[in-house]
Length: 80
Image (tube, rainbow, N blue to C red):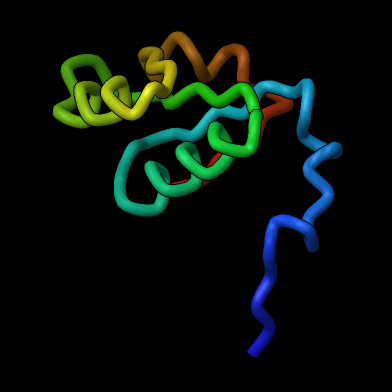
């Protein structure tokens, strides 16, 4: 088994880029939080009225409506 640490990663490939995570389930929330903690500009895209909005916002994540955000994600990454 391989274990990777921050020093093993080259985050320069995504610094300065905007990353959108669609959904805030267990994996989406973890990815968004980890990327944010690493200094990446992260937006979480959720459906209007999602119960996950409060959780994502309380974690300091930017939340946008998935329908509006999908237009600007042509070069983004999707995790969920």
